Image (cartoon, rainbow, N blue to C red; front, top):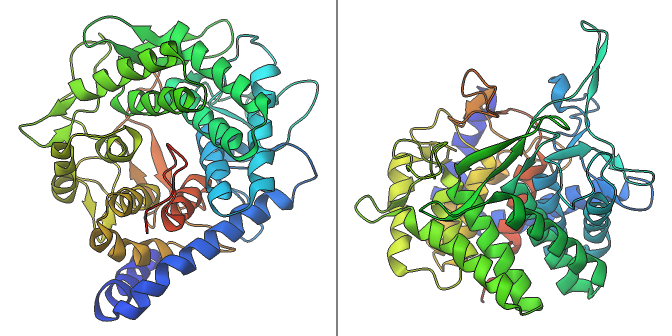
Length: 414
């Protein structure tokens, strides 16, 4: 409750009564989050590294055992992109180098796929370390099935980070790793059932993984952007074709009547889910896809009706709390679309999510729901965000504040 009250008070001052403070909030947010990300990398021994998605707060590890020391691939891809935007290229490359290493040294697969998460910390031979923890109750080593799985969207985001590292450095290993990851997705997740597109990836433990046959609008947005970015730096008809397939799926999920994107299909890969909504799937197409139709900008009206949570935004439709990461995404998308008046009030909202040492909480609420299940063995919609310092939220805030487009590497026009 204390965090929620701080947010409300901060927005009233920063976003409303004092425009001068609103102007200061964005550079303050940028400086704070960039410093936090850079310090997280430089505090580690030299070499490739992955950052914990839920770092310790005031020396205390995350209270949820399954999240301790876990480096989610998506969060680290964001952090690398953010660090380049922050002007911290050396730190950014250390994370990108870890992703390159992961494509070459999986402990169980040799096909170039990436896991959804790894053990946080320095990366090195003989292979990547997978996340897990010792269960006293079971007297056994525990691994989370989702964390060791390979979701399509996470492959795409890793590719986006690797391509930014290639653009910044010209180092061929980043391009080679990008191709490995995207070709794995092409080979293993393409589904030609109408609407053709890319399915959710694979879930489960080694030798027991099952294919996720649903198709996500967000995943296809990610792949369309990643294949387009690859085609931009290394033009190839095959890359352009993969980008078109993913983009066509996204377009098929546009509901012109409601002015919003459907979240994707169910398990049959064909029937669209018309009930649920995800904030990222609504707004990412506006900056991820080249020359998006102007009509798509109507999603701003939709998210203001369906995703508002106080002065920010929540993950799902009729949200039960503010989602810091998504609020930063909304700020980034609005700013990159020239809607600075829409982005401006959000800088103060984000600044009020401070945990400590420049990190942002994933949410000011104790816990918020996404309305989604983690995996096919979930018996409820058990994908939650918690009131914990979060790498993804901090990285998205840095991305938004710097004005970089994380899908293309381009900067906000002056």
